[in-house]
Length: 275
Image (cartoon, rainbow, N blue to C red):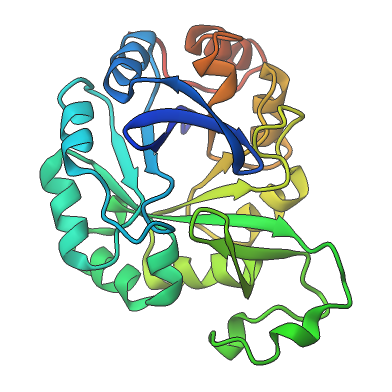
């Protein structure tokens, strides 16, 4: 039986780990290297490190921070933010990352996903999708001229829109369509974040999770909304996620990794034991 992964997320802005609500109102959560060491000791299955303002500020991910973090952990590390070309992917892997997360660049240049997967292997390529529910179901006319692939555009059946640049830019792209596309392009897994539930600690968007997990054959990481351990179980059993990502509940000491694994194991969800 495949085990479900518990993944703390280190969102980094200007060299510090931060946590916000729906991608805004950021507050400091600590030093990336120190937190990485802590989670490695605690028994996290992986770490995801996202430079959340690299794309919006039009700069590259801070390689030195990635290198520092990778030297402190012995579990898989995924790095994202500001990665725009295949040379950036190589740079992150050489700095110590095990996987690279593509978001804004993947939508601007889908061939980057295909080329990176072919060159480095699908297991190294994660596509991050920031999804937001459409507030006005009658606003699709504004997207008719969007400069995206016609087959990916939102239509009258769309419920979630893809956002880029750290959740700052709407794209006119349907989340379910884009999820299927990145799977075809060769991505090894999808990091799916609900912007609506992110940081609210009221639970993941289970409907979104379930639909994306059902639409693709690659693993889906649930992100955005964990506030208690039951939310993790729901994401796995109801949302069909292969892994659960959380930040606030771990960064600020509400729950530990061992508590999360014990809770899930007691509910017959297979998890990796703490070393």
